[in-house]
Amino acid sequence: MGSDSPEKPPYVPPRVRSLSPEEKLASPSTKTRPTLILAEDHPEVAEYFAGVLKEHFDIVAIVADGDTLVELVNQRRPDVIVSDVGLKGLNGIAATIKIREHDPDVPIVLMTASPDPDVRIEGLAAGASAFLSKSEDAHELVALLRHFLERANPR
Image (cartoon, rainbow, N blue to C red; front, side, top):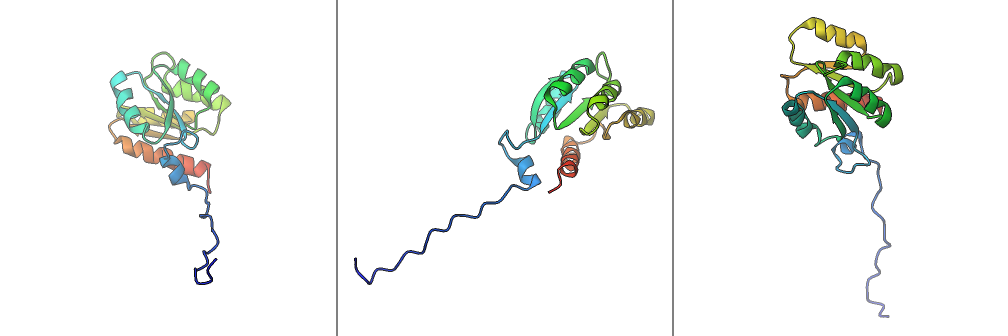
């Protein structure tokens, strides 16, 4: 219409980028959050760890025995597993051995309240990716799990 009105610049869409691994782990979307199975036979301990872990992972199951852990890992194929050693029935170390028969790569972090170094050695020899004391901060567990996921999915 009037020649004195300024022309609008053309629309430039915002730049689209993929999420970094850190952003994916922090994302509330269930499509980008890693899945986790937690195995702990003490309800109050399971509740504590689940409270911290649910901020970073989609917890697909919380189980109290090793047999159920092995069964659900085979069914649900979680991205990571956190297991107590002293589970009912099949213990965490025996469950790790069975899980490794079908899934040699999934990160498995075993935990125990036992100060016995032989328990840790046995767990690592069974195929655990790492071993933590239950007395350690749960945020250290989150950092360790993030480390395993970033190594498994380098970008």
